[in-house]
Image 1 (cartoon, rainbow, N blue to C red):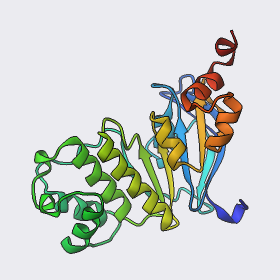
Image 2: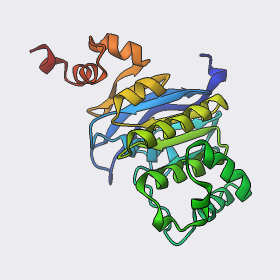
Image 3: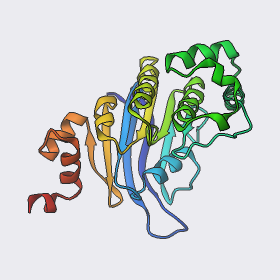
Image 4: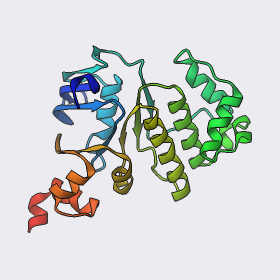
Length: 243
């Protein structure tokens, strides 16, 4: 893809905690328009730190990032954190309405209800307090609020963590629908089969650097196995896998 299709450009990005050793160092990558870009790595390896640094929630040690060619531009990014816990005293619709107000956007109950039906979220629940929602329902609500901003870039941290197969399928449908609308998604996940299904490209973060960036098919080829988990382990620990 050409530079004209680049939505976000990251160059030599390093970040960590309290000026200590960087969690990751000198990461350089692009995310293109109409692309689902996946971030893979072990627990505690720095995936959430990277996402928060891109969002401006953590100050980098060094490096630059541009969104649509502009530094510091974050208004075109919508974010769903891994531990999504909306205010329980709000109804589902009140939460979505509040979330969109942060982007100076409004939406009617009927519009939200139409979208909710597409992911099997009963519109009647939009009138109920979030405290009555299951984990899957809360996750759908968060993703709906993220998608309805209509931002060109969605950043999703483990959006399918802890969900049952039905909820996972419906969350994946929302992500693919966003791509159909020519938006980009930068997401992390431990579920490698989902990443293979959803992502145009994936990056493996390990020991503070990207050990692989490419398509899921290229990842399988580089890891020497059609099994994504085996390929992942080979790419992060080639010596152990060869032994």
